[in-house]
Image (cartoon, rainbow, N blue to C red; front, side, top):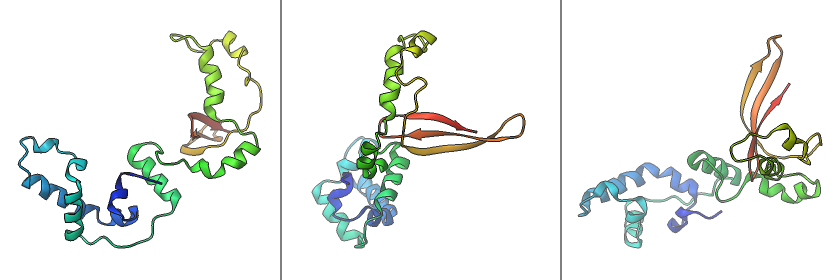
Length: 173
């Protein structure tokens, strides 16, 4: 994984451990700057090579091992809303290809291509969908699981399944 913080030469775990000190340092730099619009200075404006070396002198960055890849990806998803550097399914790619697992966008694209811009997919268009009534294998990350009770009191679950290309809502009875 590569990222914006690679310039620090430390693991992301080490950088997360010093995030408060980092923010304090940036605030101090903003106060010392002579720019008129100090509120418009970005983190990257402040992190030129000189400031980076000064920061390393002010705050000791521990030499700690990087977090596990899955945790890094989970944090990435939490902070920016999507996976940027990799996807959790990437490590299973060979298996997914061997098992002929479809990506969601392949299935959804056929449906979306059949619908007019203003229209929802109608019955005629659905009939032309090659996946209609067919069993397909998909793989994804299950998210936002909700327990729902039917009128009869039976339990069912609603959730979202996300792969590298798209997401869909699903229900299990």
